Image 1 (cartoon, rainbow, N blue to C red):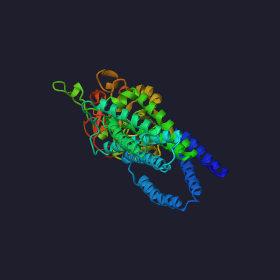
Image 2: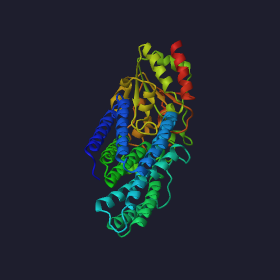
Image 3: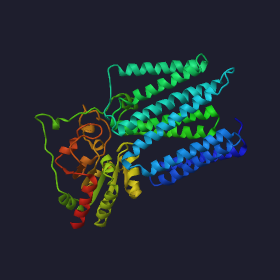
Image 4: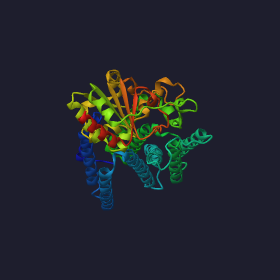
Amino acid sequence: MHLAPYIVLLYLLAAVLFIVGLHQLSSPKHARSGNLVAALGALIAVGTTIDLLHHSTLDLVLLVVAIVIGAPVGAVAARAVKMTAMPQMVASFNGVGGGAAALVAIVEFLRVPAHSSPSLVLSISVVFAVVIGAISFAGSAIAYTKLQELMRGTPITYPGQQPVNGAVAAAIVVLGVLVVVGTLSSLGLWLLLLLALVLGVAFVLPIGGADMPVVISLLNAFTGLAVAGDGFVVGNPVLIVGGTLVGASGTFLTKMMSDAMGRSLGNLLFGAFGKIQVSEAAGPGGAKSVRSGSAEDIGTLLAYSQRVIIVPGYGLAVAQAQHVARELADVLEKRGVTVDYAIHPVAGRMPGHMNVLLAEANVPYEQLKDMDEINDAFKTADVALVVGANDVVNPAARNSPGSPIYGMPILNADEAHNIVFMKRSMRPGFAGIDNELLYDPKTIMLFGDAKDSLTKLVAAVKAA
């Protein structure tokens, strides 16, 4: 497709804005402005595409109708979604993107006249976009149902699962080659779409809930790569650039998160991690008791501390307690207490979940410390206040070679002088693994809803 010079320049501007926005998203301090910059780039890209289609009345009408329907849906969903449901929204929007990429590729392939053969580049790009996009769509749908607890979050496995998945993947490769060489055309493409959907479902079913942030990141990369494939299919450079950026950043993020869990990507995806396991501490004949305390006593402990490290987790998001956590930190700081937040890379249900949660409460960016930056400071902390986190502070990752999370880097909350653990109950975290830290002699349990408990702690600190 020949593009006018001003179209090329506008697409180039959109691509530059995507790159600048992505760079800013790497820092919590600039993430909001980065999001706006990238959104501006997307707006320019869409507007340029509308101008590009002005010669085709039907295409233009369909595009405007799609925008009129999609834009309000996206805006309302983004404004109305609760922080606890943010991972589900990310999974659903990502899945829709992958499905759209697959359908665009199919439509463009079917538009090739029957008497002519598609080019090799077109055929390869179509097959790539259909397979990767369909896997992303189906996998994101399963991730959504697990996150929404419409199905159990633990791995769903059956005998011979991996050989079956391997056979499906091999069939996809064979069909893809047949479509590319022209032996099978539209029929082969539809079969390819069907098998890719099956593989997407089979791919995510055996992955446990604790690994869901990594899965979401990887599926996001898949969608980006599918969109880049569409860029080659329709000859649109901004799709190639934007899709490649998403694919590359998602891939790097996936690798970083798997490293943060101390496990290889292959083990994360094929290890069926997340089955319920109970530690020996809770087993027959070896039960240990926990020590619980009142909000008043814990408030006094916090008030007379010199350094407190707050460890946020999914329970904080569930209770919508981020604003109260910020209030508690403010009250402590007025008493001269140093307060920081320890952020584990996979805390919550999606990449960066805790950063987004605390940014909503306007927590100063300087107080958000990643794992490598904060871990040594736990030794000097008077109190580690664990709010709704579980798996990311479990000492079994260091001390129990038989544990599924053994080797996973964790926050060293157990090294603080005192540990205050806020939970609703003694149930395991999303990984389904009992936490040894609950039975540590230094640990004080504060049972209840995180928002209610934090509100009581604020009152107790003020009264101390």
